[in-house]
Amino acid sequence: MLADLDIAVLLPCYNEEKTILDVVRGFRQALPRARIYVYDNNSRDDTALKAALAGAIVRTERRQGKGHVVRRMFADIDADIYIMADGDGTYSPEDAPQLVLSLLTERADMVVGTRRGVTADAGRQGHAFGNRLFNRLYRTVFGADFTDIFSGYRVFSRRFVKSFPALSGGFEIETEMSVHASRLKLPVCELALDYGRRPEGSTSKLSTFRDGGKILWMFALLMKETRPFAFFGVVGLAFMLASLVLMEPVLVEYFRTGLVPRLPTWVLSVTLMLIAFLMGTVGLILDSLARSRAEQLRIHYLSLPQVRSPASRGGSSSEEDASLSGGETLSLAARSGGHR
Image 1 (cartoon, one colour):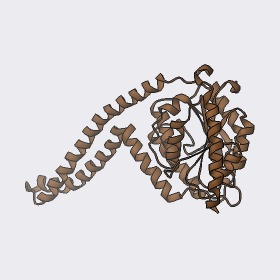
Image 2: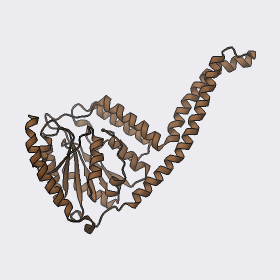
Image 3: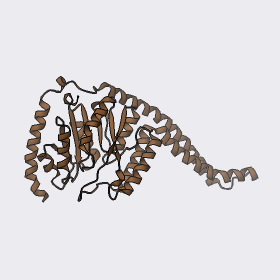
Image 4: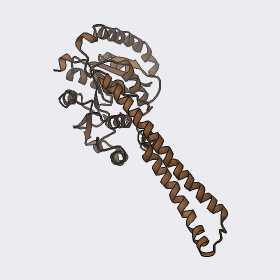
């Protein structure tokens, strides 16, 4: 079944020279017919060179951040099925065929490899707490489609990849993928997989507080874009509560004496109440626009073929990738001296 499919393995990398060689070899062994792409994101070590020597097609994305790399990969590469993993060795390439078969048998557009034992890696207690917090927040705001929105081990159909806008710049890209699937009601499924530990000398690129703040900000932006009535309703409710708190003593005094001795407070409370109603009106209008945008995205998604026929692929893609890989390998070899 897999032999007739054009499968692309996508590995965004930043300073992963200690692990990328084994990762590429693992995917080559698990999926011998797949094309393996390593996108180097300004690494300061020999990540790109080692990936090329392992047989991967190496390309470069100059904009720093995983989101920029994913956007570039999705735009550049055509395939029937896309496998995205990290180059740090925490995801097992041996699980890739199982993920692909799950995509095919479930007729899904995205399969997420949820992580068992994610807290076993040393120093990840803060990350584990953030995972639980943000996953619970996601289920509250966007729905219960996913239990691990931060997993980087995912398999996609062509329709998902070519309909995904990819606006994020950093590690919040996985959250955007999950919201995209939930927003368009795409068929998705999850598969529990073991989560490995980084080898000695390899460190995580995640910052608990900095990246956690970025993800929280992305949650707010995605809620504003996909559920504007709920977003502006919460903002309007906050203004309304503030207005009622300021208004209450003024009204009590007015009903008791017939006077309004605190006129500035009364004006402020009325202004806050008007803003609250304005937020509600804005939310209603933007909710209609958001529904229209979702409909257009859904129509575009349905217009894309899920799996291309072998005849439509042509024979030049593999040859072109091979020539690029060879040329880039020589270029990387020439540049490697600058990293040492």
